[in-house]
Image (cartoon, rainbow, N blue to C red; front, side, top):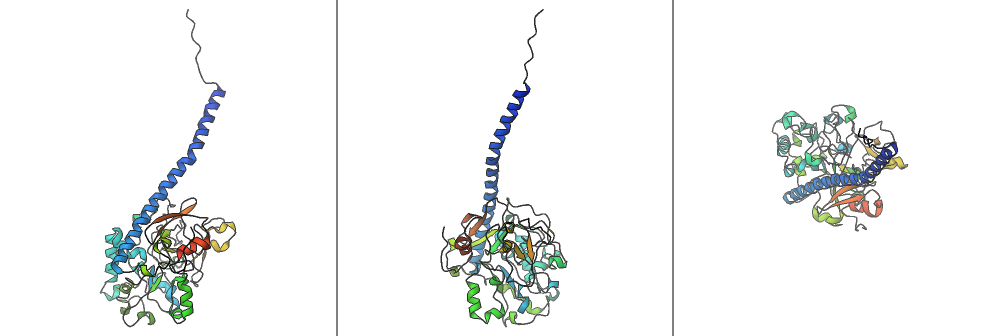
Length: 385
């Protein structure tokens, strides 16, 4: 009889060697794969920023100014309140991101805002654009986020701002995005020249040195509505006030530090919580559609610098301090409000400048020599590269 050949097979040692080699190859390939994926996400985010900047420049060509960062015709101490009507915010206009809806291809939303602003019905006056346009009759502007305002590399934020409660500052249920306008190197209070400030030239000068290309614009109609006491969001004196906001932003000529060295828009991310307002693109409060360079990009207070946590009116309280998204809630003092630019990238953040160029700025950027100088329009000097 013919002898059968013995059956060949891997020994246990050989199998372990093969598994080890495969594991080593995968370990070597994984960082490279992650790096490629991160670069692709960063590129997608940068592309959106470039498109947003071009839309803003088109707005600027039409109105001869950049869009206002936020708009109010509120009076006195209420000028900083950007919540819902029940919080006292009875005269709040469009943010920069709402103002450019026509220029980013969001015509239905833009039309909803225009109908609200141009209403002749006394009972439907647009006293608070952010709140009013979220209602069905104005096309539900703000309940969804335009795709261009979502960064591919940002953490997914599925939870909208929970509407109607004191915890949400009486704002409606608002969707969130990932881009924010540069309000300068100070606080929210520095981006707002109040009626009291206007009577003190030294205070105005100090604030102007900290301001960015976007700020809070106090608008009014003939007769200076900002100095009058409004009866409520249906006060007819509001009619036409917000139209004055178009063309009342920062002019390109006033950017003394140069377009290529002044930040326009950067990134923002928030906590996926019902009362976290960071990223609410239709709202003008701190951290919602704006940021400041008071702290470095992706500022993280977990390293022991408590001031590096965001201080906001719309803060998701209860986030542990071991989490970089921890924030401090404050609704009374705008001179304390600040929110850092934040991204979903590992080591930095995308920024588009006023000349529409996009740069990736590392978290380790010098705070005072570069980052804060990038943030101002009239700092009197240029950032060191």
